[in-house]
Length: 358
Ligand code: PHE
Image: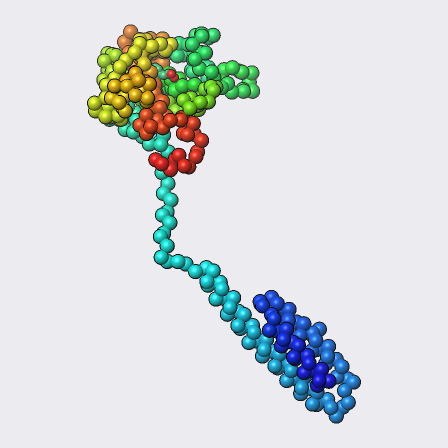
């Protein structure tokens, strides 16, 4: 029996030497010293040992048990220590590495351009007015002097909105910010009337009107199905085309430099008369001709005109007493010119590689 005990101890110690981790060590312990382990099962043979030998066998068994337990504890400590050393090494921080800069949030380039536009016009007394994205055909076209079925509507392929009340074809996503002109005028006039003011006493309007617009167009580097516009509207007594020209000169020089020249080309919009398209001299070549301006020396930046008498009347202003000017520009176009951006699709595709440059 003592022989067997010594043999058990010898084998167990050898096996302990091969244990290479804390999990294997646990395994070893239950196999060797556990209730169903090797030592316990050997001791179950104690009954067959002659009575006079039992004390000696018992003592030997206790010694084996103590030896194995001590060996187990030593092994456990050294494995735990090794595991800790390894973990420390694995998670070691190299304090000599350069730090990672914290990401700073930033404004979308369009937000930056919009704020520049607001600031320039705020200094001329224009307030920001916001109008709805989902419009009635009436406001988007009819009140702006687009007659029903007028071919000018083909200029703007619209997204119509399904409507449960059988008003299909009457509700659409605004194709431009111009319908806001009528909303703004009507709001001012309604307030004035409520205050008891007469047709000759209406307050003036001076607003810029930003907003997303939507057109069902082929998406290309130059045109998107959704894009921003900023409308401008001034209504009052004795407002002339000279006021329009002065306002736009001030604005363009504020955004693109004090030496900028403007050119007004006659154009057509149903809601302005006369109408013009405005070019500024090319910011890259200063007018001598380059790729940006397609060798014309000029860059188109907005559409404008004197508010059509019909539109004034639709807004509640008597065109015999009041006049006004309006303009509409695309902030994407302005941002593209400012930063030399080649493709309008970058603006609303949420690519951080683009956005993080601003
Ligand atoms: N609404 C016109 C467009 O979308 C721009 C414009 C606005 C022109 C105001 C004249 C006056 O093209």
